[in-house]
Image (tube, rainbow over the protein chains, first blue to last red):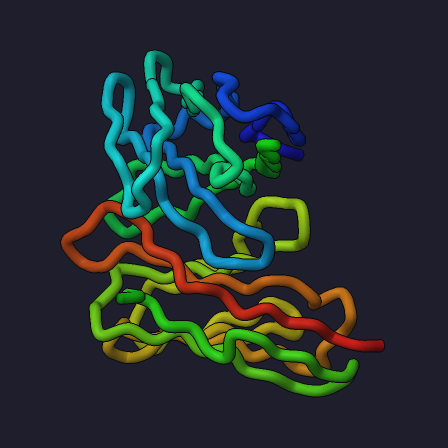
Length: 114
Length: 111
């Protein structure tokens, strides 16, 4: 039973198009994250948020932007898609906890830019 | 520089064999998590270890957190094809509130 939802599941789009990947969670978690992952490879943090109106860039340089207007919603936008953006994008959330709360992941959006 | 080093990176074994995956760091972590990820899906939490020296068991999986809270291991006894997947360790180093992930161990268990 998923408590964090990502849409679309798959997306094939042409170069130059603007796209928004949606992520919503119903757990009331303050912290949310976007990771980029090539198949079977490591996760790269591209954006994170501590709560409403908080957004930060992660370790991996990205041409995407995010917003956090509501606790449950953390969309990621690519203004102009390029083939180099082809990857899997994973959204995750966690509680704000000093001892390190585990992350709950969505099932990802597999993006292909042609 | 990877904060969490996982080894081995790839592992291909026969059903029934035992294996151990390692997750090492020079930094101290408040806790470490282990996740398993199957193709086309997001990682799923297996366990969180919090106390130095802690050992947790999940059926055939045994997780250990090092005494100094800098390393962890995952041991699988009598591996089965259903154990196939990418195993990731992750945690927040002391002083950071951003989780960091290891590169993962890709495990294939052949019937």
